[in-house]
Length: 114
Length: 112
Image (cartoon, rainbow over all chains, first blue to last red; front, side, top):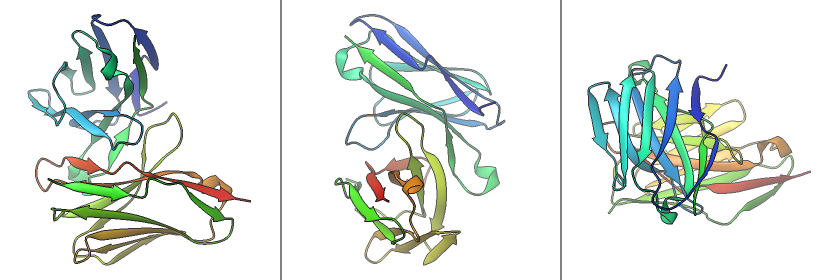
């Protein structure tokens, strides 16, 4: 089974709709991240969470919100989707206690906003 | 502002040769640098991490160098194979909160 899972894998929605992307992990990591990836650009950090009670804005948080329901679950919401939020969205986890600082990514959600 | 540059053009390499990818950064002094591999439609996968006090790191056919004076990292794949074809991303830490700054990646194509 995959360590980091994302649902849905693909989503087409209309402008103005509220949608939620979900992320679950079985790695036992405290730290979780949401990124978006656009063609020709590096991954951009939307939100990150160091534990259930610690949620922080990333570099492009406007138009997004998150919820950390448990250590294993981190959801991303688009309150009112707009076309320029069309992108590939990734959830990731890390555990710096392991000393490598590597991040483990889910398979991604391809979101299209019409 | 902090900036990371990777060659945006695809790199075509003949099978068996060494592929070398470049990651340059400006206005920044990272504590460590990471390289990831990303296949189409998939999430990035971690390959190697090199710290600021390390000049070189190796893992099997992979080698990473880190020159903090030039503000550059080189990523080498020796004896390249078609299966090495992918996009390779470099990422630098922000020295706080363990956030990473990501390059846009370089697409590597290994031709048989």
